[in-house]
Amino acid sequence: MKADVTSRRPCRLGSHRVIEPAGALPQNAWKLDARPIAYDNEILCDVDAINIDSASFLQIAATCGHDAKRIAEHIHALVALRGKQHNPATGSGGMFVGRVREVGAALRDGAGVVAGDRIASLASLTLTPLRVDKVLHVDMATGRLAIRGTAILFESCLYAKLPDDVSDGVALAVLDVAGSPAQVRRLAKPGFTVAILGVDGKSGMLAAAQARERVGATGRVIGIAPTPSTHAARLLLDQGYLDAFVAADARDPLAVVDAFTPVAPELADLTVNCVNVPGTESASILCTKDEGTVYFFSMCTSFTAAALGAEGMGKDVTMIVGNGYAKGHAAIAFETLRNHPAIGAYFTEKYGPSGYVRT
Image (cartoon, rainbow, N blue to C red; front, side):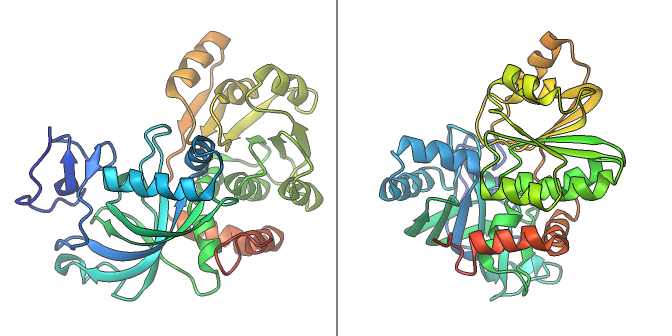
């Protein structure tokens, strides 16, 4: 059932933008009203780039035969259909970078931004009213699209002014995974063994940096990814962020356990899943000791597979869904980048001032 949004009173959670189904909140709605008009409690932004989350971009790219033109057309059509970037296959979205065009009257005193400020959204594109007028460029290596378009931020939405010392491209890459280092900072303790699946991705690298800080000299950080030969994996090993690297595909839980157990016979106190493909829940659980914690940052995580898998394995582990938000997570993510120059240099080289991968 479609809702009449024209006479709605603005809601701090954005329910007034829901077209269908009636009664839904923006994230689980099928379609949003993305008209570029700011209600009193909204911020209207001109959008320069959207970063599609890794799991979603991987799925869309495969569907479109890894053809940039088809990917652009696919995303343009999806946003036009739903009024937001919300991939129905993965249930995930991404984030945007842009410039504030207008701050609603009710927010002007406390928004912390004014027209003209450069900002990045910290709320998922799955709940952000978005209009894409034109896709200018698709970066196949990063899942980033340069666009002309607009977006709406609700009163409840999070955003960050872009720092002067970090390029837009790097900021977009870092803020897209800002929840990972912030949550690892909370969960990792001195002396812990921390296992990170998908350690050679953006979230995995930042998680490794935070884990290294937190576990101290008595703890261990073990990375898991299919190959140690990627630039990121080599950097993490060479710079001492990892005490060991396990070459294994997280979709093969028995292979992961066979490779991981000799390295960490007592298993991990904390396992962090940063993998961007489905089917990795069992490997994460099997790497974790009883009464340990599994933090599923991956957007491909299946609650059913994790819950029933742990039950079937007889594993008593605490499993945490990877909330992309933690208090202060944007500041922690940038602090992690600044405090770890080797990782900062990697992000700058890869995501660069232009926002596109350097070749």
